[in-house]
Length: 277
Length: 258
Image (tube, rainbow over all chains, first blue to last red; front, side, top):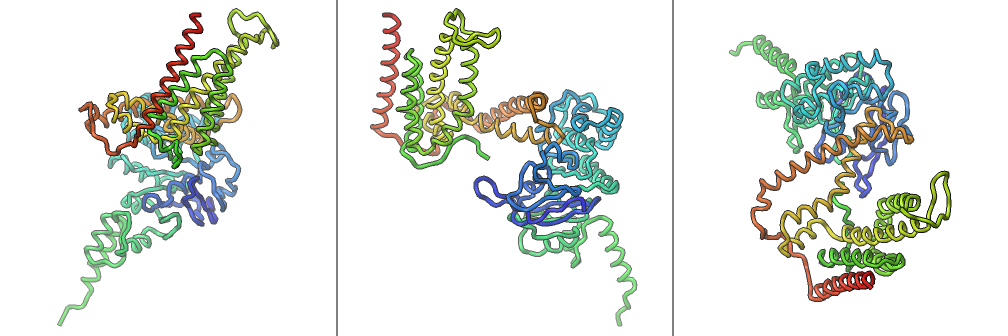
């Protein structure tokens, strides 16, 4: 198990409990979406993984090591954290230098560094912008630079905080493919997101938080079944799930493949059904 | 996250009109700078400013702010003036080629104490006054919206910068940037200052545009959402404080002229 969190509790200085006894584990290569309404504790949980926040109680173990006492820069060897606001990190005079910042800090050999930077630029579609000044780019491009700068660190765990916010369709599609590729390489991806279509298409597992507690943990479809109940929730369900509900399907579908499978299966059942008297 | 350093409370100092507290800060500053004797600002701080902070119930944060902001300034002033005071004769200590002069130390102590009173007066204002109350109070006195904006921005700039700097530092550390030791801290400076300064410029531009699009500056007499309490006693107190400041200036001029 690459990540194990046990009874994690966290309180803000004003006494508000942001996380209350959170426990779960993540296997290498899993794609996990952290979802929940605003203030549920998703980002706070994610920030614990890189050591920006420290638990009031409970433990976090990443790649077999307890994170207590490890500095953020040390955890950066294992966890790549892509912040929601790219402008918090962009400081270099070119995209290439910005992407090379992390590998340089981690003291990769020059050849390895060059290889990682080139790969990260290619995967994020930034090869044509290597010499551009990061601050001359659009928000979507700046977010991709921030993502590339983390990918270039070659960490086994990648955490994305609201990765699709402010991104156009092409960038979201690129990001989705990247999540799938990283998982296929055995790297673990955790994403804090409100984008249910993105979540449904690219993540194996959903951990839903409410008031600092885990209220659901499992495959996307299981969570959608729960969220489909008329109990009120903070999300707009994926379009395919809503369409399935309008068609009267009891089991929610989340992906295009799932939807097509279900349609095919229904058509097959209808064809095989005995004709009426 | 805090937008200002304001510490909420219900003390009498908190309830004073912000203009009264602003007058207090200006008056004690003028009084401190007007007198040449170093004991005078020390007396002002110990007898007037510090007791006011205690009465407001913010003394801990007040002293922490002074320790964080005044102490480094005082040390810098002491080093620069103590070792490099022009025309100093009375050497009290030597550090290699550097000479510590009594004239320099005396001037440094006096300057540091002046700054102590200045910072103390304004920290008390910041700690006991919410930025919106200060803006409303100034607006009620027909102060120009541009001036109010500058004062408000100044009040909020320290916590905003602090929060932003923390976010940037975390983002750089998350990419392996270490900040241990002097060299580590120096190396971390450029990746910190670049985004910090740039974001400050962007914020200023965006905030100005956002305020203008909401009618800021369209009239010199905007209406206020809240009315800040004032009283005849406070008006008298403000007049007395300004009189004290004026007297100290006159005494200073008289003393110098004489």
